[in-house]
View 1 (cartoon, rainbow, N blue to C red):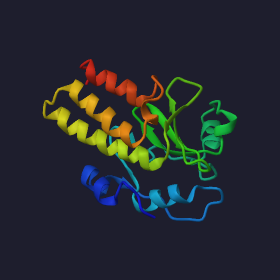
View 2: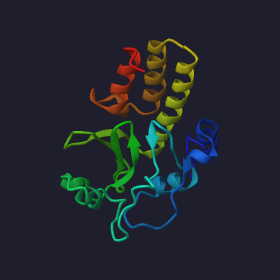
View 3: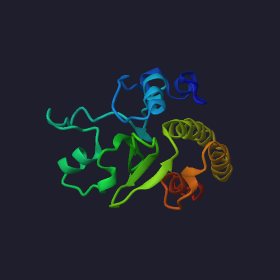
Length: 184
């Protein structure tokens, strides 16, 4: 499959040691394009997006830590019925990020909320935004104007997928607001 985001782009942004690949497998009802993307391009692992489990806090061997229903049950949290079969991808800032394996849409479960927000049309869009955000972080460290960085991020990412900015409470909008107000 051809993707707009390449493994080289992800590696240049995050380094090979910070990429997590998912094993290629024939999982029933998992979107084939998403499965291929996760196994060939992967997900980054950073302070902004944590895609690895905490080795110091392992799950019991009989726990399915991938599906949200099992994970939420383990922690005694309420999981919306329609999202119980979704797969966890990681954490974006303070939001748990999951993919609906059938529709390929990516959702965020903000900390302290009992609901979720559609975050990206698919996992490729998520990774595209994370690569652009890495560029934003580097430019921020080099004293580029925060408002210019925010505007550029919204323009570039929004042209690829407008979903990240559709909800005012999305993690991307909140983070860019913090950037613009000098909270970084």
